[in-house]
Image (tube, rainbow, N blue to C red; front, side):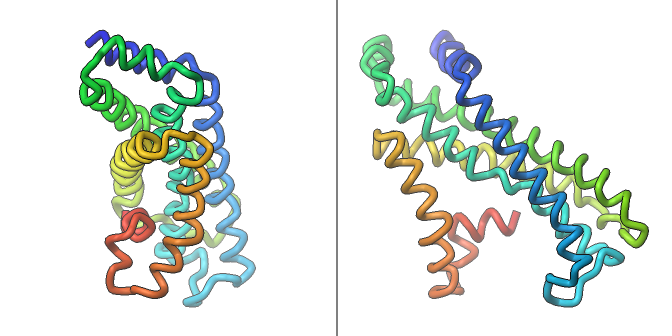
Length: 210
């Protein structure tokens, strides 16, 4: 229990982690807020307009856009120990590394889920406000907000854990972050194009499916 409390304090007292939360909120809000205007400008395929529940669902679906920051959070929780030189003290306090790693994974899952939940609902509220200014905006499909809440919690927990794993493997915080960004925005999209059949099993496909 003391190890769990120690890991939680590291999350709460490191200002960079709060910066990650703010960044996730800002990106999610921007993604949701600009989408109605894109629909109105007719720049979206399939002929969707804001009087369609499917279009509104598409607007709110962008609420999970801050997921990349949850991965970065997980990376910083692990690789940050090596960057700041606290890894030795941490592992000396608990010689069994698997216990330390388990504690970090648990805290990462909880904090990642909470961060995503906050960013998702902040952007949902922003979307509600913006869509209220459009006379032709339809109501979202039944269960949209619940589905987004579940998706935020699950994806936040899983992606933060993945971030910890990447940080543990690469140890370099900067290298781990760059690798994650390159994979998500370059390699993953290429794999989605080259191997369509496995798309749903890749991180990008799983996030989209949520």
